[in-house]
Image (cartoon, rainbow, N blue to C red; front, side, top):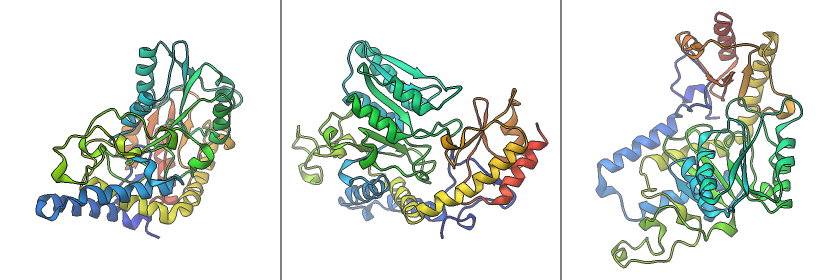
Length: 375
């Protein structure tokens, strides 16, 4: 069991309950990055094959995580890049609309806003329902004028959960593509692309995938892998493995999702870090879910005793809790808690608490003790 506190450089007196912001680095992930930097320090150790081997290894790991195939995986710098690819390749007509959630993360909003504006389409925002659930509201909103449904698996501010199986079925009923940003869920919640059947699935590496910043992955449905990239780099062209022939310019692109890769995707520090992190998650994915749920149950009990408002249990992700207060939260709450060596986030009017397996019950107790001194 490697995902324990001893394998992270977290001081004993510090309660870090903020994986939804940035994950700490596991020692194995950190070492992989340091080894990669050392290779770049000595470039004579880097062969032409190294531009491809680790890229393919990373694709295989991410594909396993989403129960997909490695040929469908692209290596990107960010979620916004991936959603830019999706927006560039999905059809959209005048008078149609893109469905998004209220207060959805900007990386899964701005690319659709730009594309819709250019095509004479619009963004339709599904408000947070006061009664009922968000999944029902989304399914009701999907119709023949829906061009794309662009969603997360759970909301980034409070962990409110969507039923992607039901939403996917509603999308297929109207032949509407589904584009998912799963940055705040993948690595904890299971997602099977064979069941959900999305067009695009994108995730940044630096949160629940326990990896580095400036790296993301995207899985693309088979019928979209002949699409157009949003940049033109040499790695995306066929025959790029033959360095001596790169001056023989080619029009034909790679025959799979590799055509969507970002330029300089073969990062000799970031890719080894991502591979190490994905190996950890794949080895312990069941324990990750159950362990975090146990911590969340303790958080929920403490929150209820203090009168916080919580999402319905059936609509609540186990790893990302939004504790809503009946009133205004102090604007400096994260700073005050940080001074007490407790780290969480405030998003909207919710205190966002996001534990992982490096946390234990004492972290939860420290959080509530610090919170009681402020509210």
